[in-house]
Length: 453
Ligand SMILES: Nc1nc2c(ncn2[C@@H]2O[C@H](COP(=O)(O)OP(=O)(O)OP(=O)(O)O)[C@@H](O)[C@H]2O)c(=O)[nH]1
Ligand SMILES: [Mg+2]
Image (tube, rainbow, N blue to C red; front, side):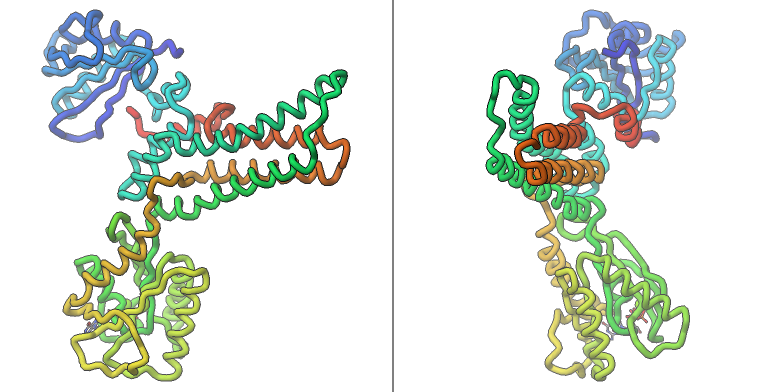
């Protein structure tokens, strides 16, 4: 256990009703005794005590002290939480009092790091604490909660258990040749590896959805110039964000704005209208960016101006836009805009009737978007949301593939090579839960935390 007593504010800077300071470590009680006017050594565990905090003989504030003794405390060490009024002056005086009594300011994530080192949680759960604090929508919150409750670790253990068993069997054969243990039958061994390999890749593939949930799905508004794309962006946002004009080719650069839809915060992207016959270099670049945005989005919202006939040339462009959008199976929603004007567009064009100008049909469109995106919200299933976890899973899968290959390539004497790859595979899986994560990995993970967590 760490000898040093650390201290930090657990609440953000600035004025608030309450502010919380946490002291943690072997001598937390002793340090707190130096500035709290109560019999700190006899604080009852998990019982709030009203007392006064004093700094250089001046009362700083009336505070509530709460003592969480080791080993049951969330950090696994003695922990004292002191709640004061949330004035920056009071809180900084409290911090100074703690420091003058021998505590040191905690590093980012140090409380959680100690919880991990004291076996209170594994590494993937510790990382989920960060995810939970950063989650700004229900889906991201759910994904972090699933991870915090041990979902990722449990799945990893399911991969590790049979691998450990196989490795133990092979190592027993290698280490005790005198006992003449038969090695695992090749066929069975290969098929078990095949199954684990597929399950690891399956789990790794949830990263695509996990990533989207964290960053929010991207909704790209695309269409011909002047169809009302920027007007639609403004209508969905409820404010005049993008320039709207009757001149075709108004929007050049893509405009991105967060939009809360259903349980998710998505990124709404307005793009330059796409047309073939332009000589304007800036507009051409705008169109290139539109196409990029369309490719990189998760949902395409195609806007058509229903008050105009669509020429053969324009029809080709719209079909090309839809084709680009549909390429990787992303959902496409067609809207027929300008429903306040008489319809001139051919009957064959179908879509949600809206008027971006009069804000009609917008709530139906929001509902439609929310239904399409609902599929992205995780239920109780466990998703990979961390790049680090994804990489480790792919590396573990590659080692298992290599173990399979050593059996196929060296019939009769594959044990040593296969054992090497199984050990490596297990090492990569262990990195996720932190059984064997090095100092650099821990530093990199916990430095992303805020101080006080
Ligand atoms: N009557 C009517 N006019 C609309 C509607 N939506 C947009 N407009 C008008 O159509 C013109 C073009 O609107 P924009 O929102 O700038 O269209 P855009 O698709 O962003 O155009 P570009 O950026 O040039 O590609 C403007 O004059 C808008 O006021 C609508 O629902 N009804
Ligand atoms: Mg525009």
